[in-house]
Image (cartoon, rainbow, N blue to C red; front, side, top):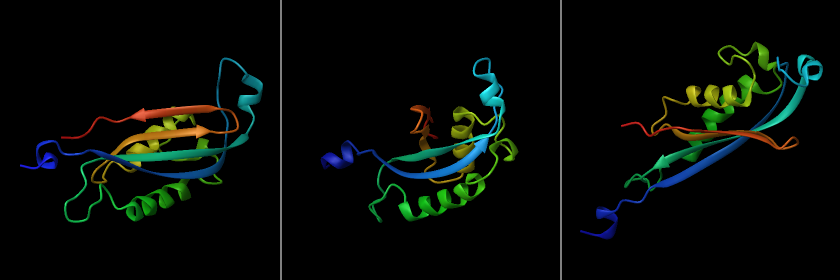
Length: 132
């Protein structure tokens, strides 16, 4: 047996995208500013982990992942996030869940979703357990 057979390597590949969107938010602090419609440039990163396919040499075809993210970006970019079906309150946490749920049918499914707002220094990371 080779070292690779006994100890298979696990890879993580990722793809990033961005979207500009507006939202409102009910908060205990900064209430006045949060309730007004305001916008941000959001950045998102989706990671997929697993062994590489022996035939293709890839964990996932990044072109396929990019295509899925482009479709997802269309649902978010230049929209009022309060009105995006299935998102709920437009928090960073809910954006992570929304993105993960939209890609849950992928093989392999995302292992991590990260959403952040560079200008504010805010970030949220959703770590997803591998499926059996």
